[in-house]
Length: 99
Image (cartoon, rainbow, N blue to C red; front, top):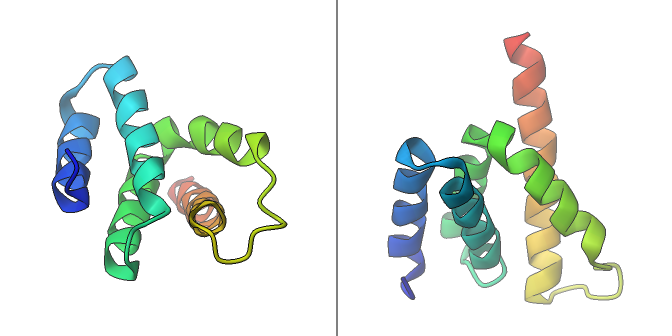
């Protein structure tokens, strides 16, 4: 959906009920939404990615490794990279707490 809030809700539903290829597509859509999301929506997206970190971790790592964000300070790509780094940190911390 073009509405980012509706897209987030659809992705959340997909991540709880769909098969693996659909879950990957939902993770990629959430990552796509991050660049232009306002801070509250971005926080909700990050929370969703952390909740589904087992599925999201490798995808996030791939996205972060494919692009050079260092030269862009306030672009959507730079905001996305910062958000994904926070997800990786929070997701890793969450996994350590569960063990």
